[in-house]
Image 1 (cartoon, helix red, strand yellow):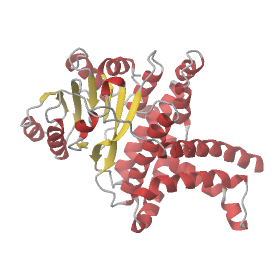
Image 2 (cartoon, rainbow, N blue to C red):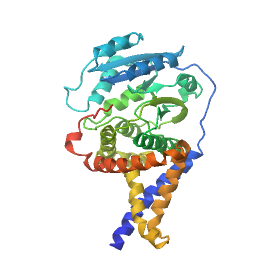
Image 3 (cartoon, rainbow, N blue to C red):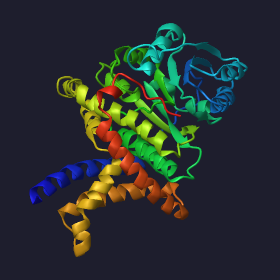
Image 4 (cartoon, rainbow, N blue to C red):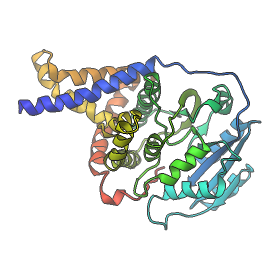
Length: 386
């Protein structure tokens, strides 16, 4: 039993130390700004599956943000209410209605492939931006983008921030998003790696975007992680940038059912790629010398952060009762330190109770999602969430 505890502790310690190093590196990262310059032509793609009234706010924010920048917008309506379609068309953006739910496989991948084939030309639009149907763009988004010398990069990732964090689950989701920004974007860039894209608000070179979409696995249950695998295993050495001043805002779900569906898709995609694409990532790392691929594989195999925190806390209970400190407590110490660094800046003292309530729900939900996400019924599909 003691040996098993030491093995589990060692595994958790590796992941905890990895996370803490990236968080600390992310805290030292500074945004790079170049000279203000005219943007190359950008195509904003909005794959809108059953959009609601929030989508109209998204379009209004996009209209305000694009100003005189060379930005074109294309909306792909999927199974949309006609009243929403009619109101959306008043903004004057190009659009089309199409269904993909009858096709086998990931419907979102079908939508993106359709956009690449029919409505995206790298000779006309040098960069592409995917925007989710609930992403409300800050008015200065493209003004900020004009300050980062876009032409020097393959990818520039913006920040996703919550509209509100009044509920426990919303608060925990916001903390998770900040973890991602510090660890997977700022931290990796600071240590010389490539950032990991988010599902939206990433400005990507169009030829690279089309290349990766064409290679995506048909059974992969999501988009961004499988897309990232294809980029990292390509011949291109990615040059990426994270700009947390380019902001899109979204309403985080307060309902555990919607949260679990979201995590089911995210974990499903994470562990699908860890399992089915490990060979290509290892080959890229050790044969082509692209060790960013190895780092990404390590990121894919890590357990959910909430489960790491709880599991490491349970291992340290013996030390807590004995008022002592041993090897078993190290993972919890590192996880707790990371959590405090990430969570404190976006929390108020009165929200501690909300966080505890949210954490209880989230841990159980994440445990279920991480155990069931690789079931065959979740592969070859895309779980849409509100």
